[in-house]
Length: 263
Image (cartoon, rainbow, N blue to C red; front, side, top):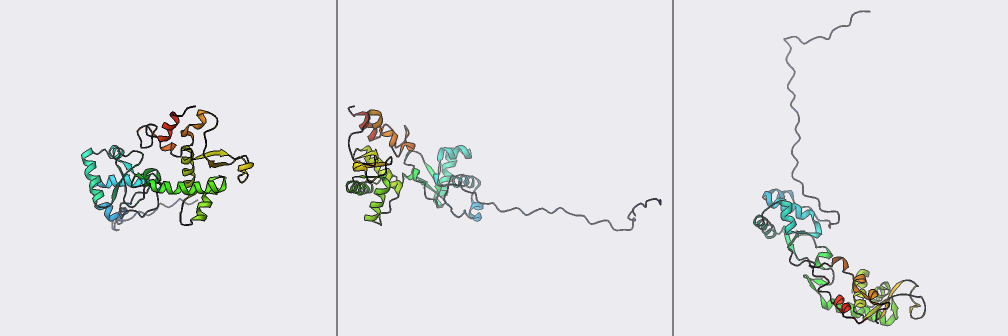
């Protein structure tokens, strides 16, 4: 078997191989942050605006943007950015003046300063929902829909929220109330004892409502003793109730009425 040939080595007269420089990818421009999954879809802020912000303002904006339609409380923002109170106030004030951020009122905690992207509409739990305007309860709107609901219950005798909703829509197609809004109003009317919440038996005055379904009829005294009449169990704002909030046991008129009841 013939011996294996050694590979030829380049002679000293051959030119050296050219230097190969590593390819360094170009730096990508700063991308706008992605908002929370439950935030409404909005166009991201332009890279030009984001890159022109000072570092502290850019950090503040990114964190507020990610908070979406819930916004971010100034104290949480200060802890997240580790800025001093004075520095944070300066940054947020500048962003508000540029129209990039806005300050909104949280109806649950009016003393808290909440910041949000100026293009995002606050979540209902922040504004108080349909029945609030500029952070204040719209008593005229509430009174109007209560009258509409009462008219439907008087006409039907006993009615489910769905039946009341359909009746209101039929009488005024432009009203635009959702079923959840009607349900909230019926529950508050039951707390006021204007209406009474009952489960249908499917007979007599409840013959139009399938047995077992929750319905409402003209008000009366609560049945079953004091614990059945406690308002907290059916309160539509139960999740927003807190000792230091706008909605709280100390300010709740329904809770005070219940405490004064003679059982």
